[in-house]
Length: 342
Ligand code: ATP
Ligand code: MG
Ligand code: FE
View 1 (tube, rainbow, N blue to C red):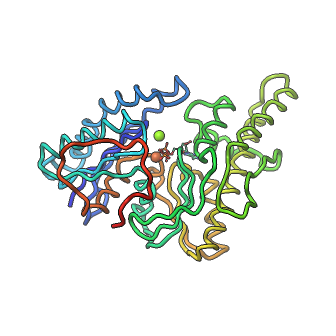
View 2: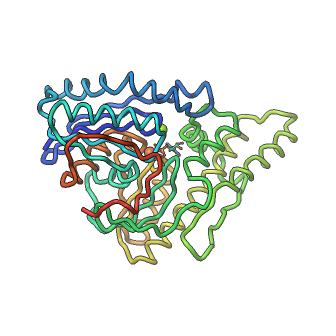
View 3: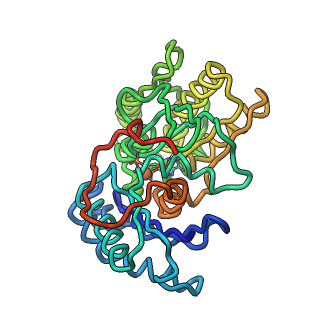
């Protein structure tokens, strides 16, 4: 079965083709980052309009790349939520209109299930059950995953998501939106020993986390350093602060993951979401895995942040829920736990 996947929940338009026998066939992406950078964050109305411009050309690019036609598609998966209402509406209406015209079924996909299952697009691919560390721009959760649609939240952030903390901290350091990846690049040439930032909830008995205090701690450190340096931070100080921030986040994520592995007795850890692209996080988890004898899996680097491939794949896992295209709606808020098990 050939599934077309369409993602448009935020500021990336992603389209992909996934074949249930042959795997990922094609995927194309357009990121709106540059467009939103001017405003320092995602402008919902601009996002929707841009999805409209991109979704058909990206679909055509996927088909052309592998010499297929619309008529070769068996089903269309689309992100129904959660996300920005107007942005979701673009992918949802295009998916339903195309499916209606082609006389094929649609599959409504939960964006976070897309992220959660994306490590299954890599080789080697993890078997169920596994512990998932979902670290994206809007979510930071530890989950026990027993199968498709069987997700149990074990712990989560009580305030900012890890990706959000990266982006907000980058902003207060004067880095361009979205600053997470830039911050982590600067951190690589920072001195880990110069500054130490707090590790909120590191030793709490539960698996919850908190990252908003860290941002405030960075602000205090920046002010203090600026005062010492007569107004502006020198480049090395900025890098050292980035490093201190990243050290703190990574230590919390690793320690909580290890605690969850111990608690559940699971031997496989799967990392998903944009922060899963972070090199220091990957290195720290790989090291812990070698020491503590568990396996760790990541999505292919290009599929950590939003993309159509994870939506096509999640759709292919949910083919039995495919239904004829009829009326449609979006779910800007949608609880992952409400999904039926496959
Ligand atoms: P959600 O899926 O929760 O709705 P989202 O779709 O915005 O949120 P993703 O696309 O999974 O989130 O990830 C984007 C986030 O990942 C951003 O916050 C970005 O800063 C962060 N990110 C991307 N690359 C890196 C990196 N190398 N290091 C740290 N953070 C990163
Ligand atoms: Mg994005
Ligand atoms: Fe996402």
